[in-house]
Image (cartoon, rainbow, N blue to C red; front, side, top):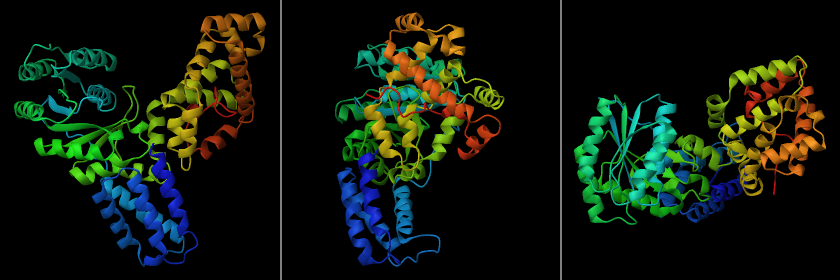
Length: 460
């Protein structure tokens, strides 16, 4: 995420190393590089000017503390200003109202609006423990209603039915009544999108807003449109009292211009980031954490939160005890590790959040066959329980049966068995107190978030 901007800024800030004091002269070239990096990232020009001027004013003449080099001091100034530009802190949804709390979702066609409604429903159900109803008022795109119905079933939300021959106002009024009857805490309304902003669209959505009086009005915008994302959000903000923005397709945006521009241009906070196609790929927006990631310092807090939310702690502790007692690390344990890593978003997502590993995440995304993990699990699932516990018994005939049952090839199975042996050797070293030492070194994170040794499996 934002690899281009991160790389340019990181290389620019290295120029400050070795300086004993920050002055206008020695930060001039670096600021020019920062300005170019922001412009190339498609950050809105007024935002670039405001940002670089603020950095300059804060950095000039700043005394360097005993524990900081000038480069670190300048980096801190840049980080603080990045965070300030995107918003001082995470702004969560305001649901403090008589149920159902209505969330109106607006945006242009193709921005990922309907998918974002489903993601938001899943987020509220899973993390906030809310009962959620969703409804589609998009009567112009027949597939939109069916799409939302399918997604609602996937995420466990109630679906208020609608048809393409109804009036949007009638649909939402009926949905509110249904949400009340179902004792839903939240009603999320998916509105019609257009390929471009037009008056008819604005009139309709303003009428819906007046009828619903939503507590949250969220604008969904594609991060990959860069500066245009901020400008479009501003146009919607002039027509509607927006309370926040959902920035989609952030995982595919290497520039970052939208994330840096939206808050400054619209005055509205980014509340969520869409970071993938799956319905769980929605993250609360934390300006401080994103600023850290942009500067190549990672995002350990989010990584730890991912681990806390997705790692099966009982399985992790069971494995720790097993290894400490000298038990064999078998293929069932290996399968658990693969599942835990996949639950945390895979290798590239984990690397992207580790300090200094942003470039490695990009390489992993390009070079790792992500389907390989699914095939590895399929191979293990095709084995008998005896074969999973004692991989040494897997002979030629057994290999042919396993690969035929999992739709894979024998070389893939050989690679899996080799990787398992490597991990088994590593686990043997953890016998006794070794596992506890390893966990202390990982900051207390359980081993469930680990990855197979020997590099990236299945690299193309």
